Amino acid sequence: MILAPSDRIYIAGHRGLVGSAIARRLTKDACDNLVLRTSSELDLREQADVRTFFEEEKPDYVFLAAARVGGIHANNTYPADFIRDNLQIQTNIIDAAYRSGVKKLLFLGSSCIYPKFAPQPMPEDCLLTSELEPTNECYALAKIAGLKMCAAYRRQYGFNAISAMPTNLYGPGDNFDLENSHVLPALLRKFHEAKESGAEHVVVWGTGTPRREFLHVDDLADACVHLMRTYEEEQWVNVGVGEDISIGELAQLVAKVVGYTGKIQYDTTKPDGTPKKLLDVGKINSLGWKAKIDLKEGISETYRHFCTER
Image (cartoon, rainbow, N blue to C red; front, side, top):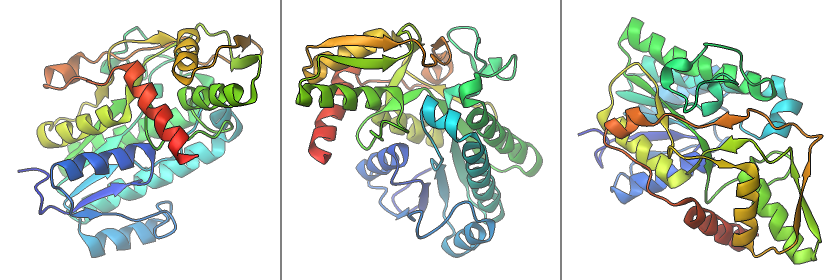
């Protein structure tokens, strides 16, 4: 059985949004033989250190959830950091996992790998058919390199590496820093602070018209475990809910959850990013998995977590 309780399972990035959710999910199945390292204990950008770690720990399975991530502002401001760090992290882990005899590795990409004007919903095979969204191009290129590296190592070496491409994520453990966070946690913090201060309005970046799909991170973790146990192909797999919402509608929903009653204003001088991002989830649905957590329910849970952790 894949992911048996006795298996040594390395979660790269276990303190992050995705990695911590995968750890929670595995623990539910009594898979508690987890191999974990913080970034201070193991710098995944250092090839020699990563190789030594794999040689000494000999994990059976690897979830590669470690990455430098951020929203439009962070991607626009630090493109060199995003492409360098992500290329180093994933290259070091994938290669060391293969060399040390890991049984199977799951690499986590992102829906931003797909073209800016990809067909909607976006199927897996639309990758590299046209140009990327400029605001996160460097991050996307690194993630594309990661999934292609997994495919190449499978093809040339027979290494059992698979890739999952999640849509926009949210949930407990998210980053709520306004400078570096993604849109949903940023909105939660903005509306919360506006409610506390009694602000008359909240400013939302862009026009409010772009549409996005949002997946609760616990749903993603469940999908990752499902794929690790059942999927054995080179083709990457989209992971999403199959439904989207406009940023304007999302802002209204967040305001309602938070209890903010002021006005919403849009700063149209700020970039919108890709106009629409909805994944085609037909493949993963056909593999026996579907998202379960309702968006309003998930946002409410995330907001409770945010309030508790402040």
